[in-house]
Amino acid sequence: MGETAVGNYFKDWKEREAIAELMIPLIGRLYRDHEVICTVFDRNLVNQSTIDILRVHRFARQIINREIWVKDTYPILQVMAEMDLAPAKVDLAKLVLRYQEQSDQDIRTFVTEQLSDLNTGKGHQLSAPRDVVLYGFGRIGRLLARILIEQAGGGDKLRLRAAVVRKGSDDDLAKRASLLRRDSVHGHFKGTIIVDQEQSSIVANGNQIRIIYADSPEEVDYTSYGINNAIVIDNTGKWRDRAGLSRHLRPGASQVLLTAPGKGDIPNVVYGVNNELLDAGDQILSAASCTTNAIVPVLKAINDRFGIENGHVETCHSYTNDQNLIDNYHNKERRGRSAPLNMVITETGAAKAVAKALPELAGKLTGNAIRVPTPNVSLAILNLTLKQETSVDELNLYLRGMSLESPLQDQIDYTNSPEAVSSDMVGSSYAGIVDSLATIVQGNRCVLYVWYDNEYGYSHQVVRIVEKLSGLNLEQWPK
Image (cartoon, rainbow, N blue to C red; front, side, top):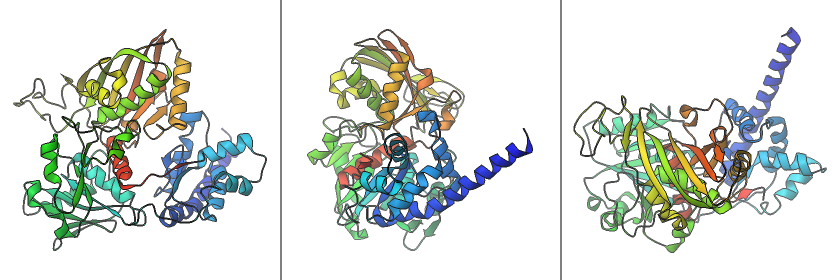
């Protein structure tokens, strides 16, 4: 490679870097002042670094087989920054594609017309912030805290007020702050964390989270902490029926959301699929399981288009805290064997849970699970018999379209990378990621491979439910 080519590559990089730097304050201002979230193929640009913005743009290759350039999205962002937009999610990449494919207008006229119905003036979706309480502060609880803090915006949306835990030691508060600050899987917390011993609080990016010590829900009066009409997210899994979860309905708490499959008549919600359950005004809800959230959107998409006769779901699931580090007694079969050293065949309720979200698939699916020696990210293998024949190309093209333009675009992601492995999916906010290069089709039989970050992707699904319950529902643009 000659000196000229090397110089051109570097010059091009520095030019793109400079544009990305100019984008950051515009993205931040739109978010804080207007509650407008800018994305590239639904990947969030808010609070991202210069390099992150460039990386997100380049990721477009895995969706449309070519890059989206910052030199194309930046002019759109400039026009948006001059508009008086209402709260929404705006996909800059989709605007670029539409402009390049359909428009002979100048960019200002094009953007103004595309977002004319959004250009209605600043507003807030809520008359007052909605209080959120975490009951438990483990793996899912701390990730929920990270997401809620990151999405706090101007402070007028969801407001994480407290976490209820059992006190472990005299330095309990410092230890819990440290676990929020540092995570072996998801990395360092993006921001600053302060411990306020006097207020028994963790202050993360200015958000005061009261740490309430209690051995049972009945011990807590949330109003004494200034908390009212709160959604309590139970991420302990200790209670899964209506009687147990009703114990959380204390003064200051009006709704309960369980981060595990609910039992009995508790509605199990997979966000994006059966959202109608959220409109019934039920005080107690379940967000189902991480595996159910990963597979149900893809199963719904496939069933809607091709029909499903029957199938089997096998999950290769990362080990969890329920298992032992080394061989020791466990009340369930096989789970007593060392999690980091073994693949462990175990049961999963995901196949049965599908029927709660998709009644039309009741009795059509079987399921099993293998716990594997990885700390995070799991893989669901969907072996399906369809009601009609198809092909790899047709099936993949359909699923790619569902990931880009459909009511399930926040749940279904899509990759065509020939080098994708589980660790690449850490931090994905999607319920599941279709690995298109692994798709197998033979007549009316297909095998689909769906990755999912069983911690972070699931936590985002939980937050989506909380947003919907609170009246936060950002429309997707362009239409």
